[in-house]
Structure formats: structure tokens, C-alpha cells
Image 1 (spheres, rainbow, N blue to C red):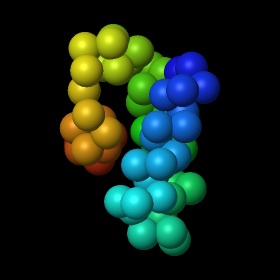
Image 2: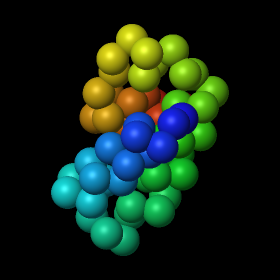
Image 3: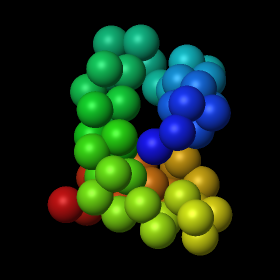
Image 4: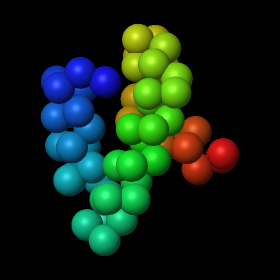
Length: 56
């Protein structure tokens, strides 16, 4: 995941996820995105990626 994408994720987390959950959600989403880099290339949104991590 490039720096721009990481910054975009951080902004989304900051305004969407409760601060007590940010570290956990961030970790899961980064790991999932690194395992499936095609998702970002295909234009999956952060909410879609988060749902996918929760289904695992």
C-alpha cells in the first residue's frame, strides 16, 4: 500500500471509526489490503474492505 493510500485510510478511520477501535481496524484493513492488492486497484471503498475483513 503506497503512502497516499495509507493517508487516505488514516483520514477515513479518523472520521468513521471510534477512536478505541482505530488501531484494531487499521491493522486488519492493512493486512487484508496487502493480501489482496487487487481490491484497491479495482476501486473497492474502505467500507467494502472493512466488511470483507469482518467476514473473515
